[in-house]
Image (cartoon, rainbow, N blue to C red; front, side, top):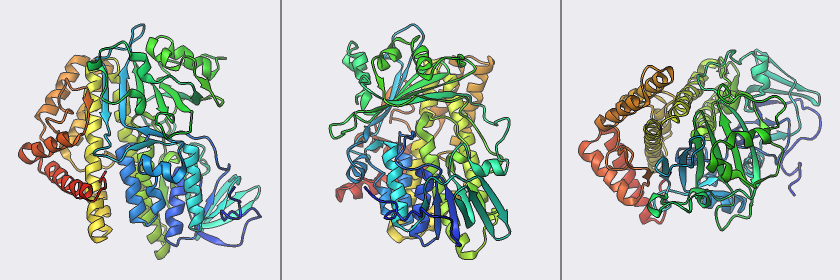
Length: 563
């Protein structure tokens, strides 16, 4: 057992020292930022009102998240972060307690009917092309990063509850029952109950987001393998990769339930599975006096195969249940302060955007803090892009998730939303990988700072006008469906017409083809994608894909993977 002293924790009273940066919250965001700053010589204090290890969710990763983690590791010379960027490395570094993620799986359900195997989608992450992603067992991941921060010299205090935050011309004072601390800058990464948001009255009321959902979740034993629900269907209707080997989304009108398994590979010693659900409280309000477990069962019951998925599972913790999940802030950065990640706002766990937003925000904040410390200039103007990025990432995700929730009334409309999300996320990944490849070649940091100068901040693919217009069209059409101004069928046709017309949207890969339900970026499909881009594609798309294909081939020749 690692002791408090070995971790660099101060278990005594406050000190007469001024830290460069104080970070509230030692979850993934706070600990990762603390590790980076401490590694770069910034005198960093990491405070937390609780202690590790502890239960947390946010367990599903996406290629964009993993690539951003590799970028953080190399850009800021913290190789330990790269251990989280693939299932293999995570298992080696932290132990065999993680699930494998070989795809994003989506199954649409309707009340009173078995799941229709024609209304499914799977987006694969095949090991021949990509690093295999992981289902994070977050209590281990967060504690690992917490230890990395301590290793590089961050001063750590657990079980320190901040009661007040006071600013003056030279810094900030953090006060609690156990003492006081002083810093030149404060980052609040503590989540929804942010002391800084309370102090500065930053929460928006009403919340500005369109999307509405409430949630409940747990970890459980004996969760059925999703594929066992569908042994009766023909093999040609089954996905190329078993459902249970990826992140499973059971969708229904205005809600979805998840299955994120930690026991879905032969190496795992973890018998648990993350289960949960988010629903629109306007359609599915809470019933007074009903427990979260009873509520979960009630919401599953109208959908036979969702009910079967969770039948007989054994929760291992107390259920957590929320009211409306969404919250927003008037600002996320100012003079000597920043709200980071979930302290800034939250939408919904759909599309696993939370972890990628966290990593991206840390990436743009860290180098600014390092320069601010050097220049002794912590003015809000230096952090305007951090605020803009965090706010627009939340706004764009709000639009995407709200569009998805609307689309689940009709599979055709959902399939269009699915494809727009899938290509945007992948194009954004190619764009970032192009910058990382250049950085590896010459070590110039401006490859990363150049990524920030874009016209459509907040989108995964923020520098393509055509894709931004398609995103806006998706939002406009799904809003019109919800308002009754158009039909789902007409909206679907309009979106597919734009997808087919657009030279920025790949053809022959499966994403643009309406009848292709299972999208697998195999080596052959990737080659087809590059050929299409070279002959017919938008010049930016052609450049990104060609550059990444060359880099991928070089990596394979060295026995490595690029993504």
